[in-house]
Image (tube, rainbow, N blue to C red; front, side, top):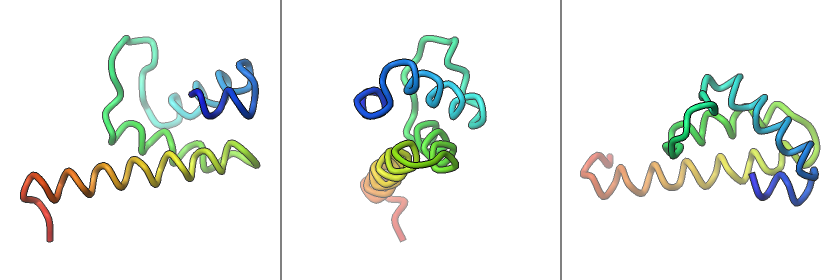
Length: 79
């Protein structure tokens, strides 16, 4: 959210984040920590935006996938 706010401003970031959460099926009305899987789903929805929103979605998707892959390897689930 901070990355979006720096580029899109608070209002634009809030709109983009809530849209992506809604489209990803992540309920942001609940107070909870997002899982890496939820972050990845949100990032994939940000990718459907344009300009900075898409770039930030790409960055978030890469970070989420990397975390998921590294932790899968540590859990013994690697290939």
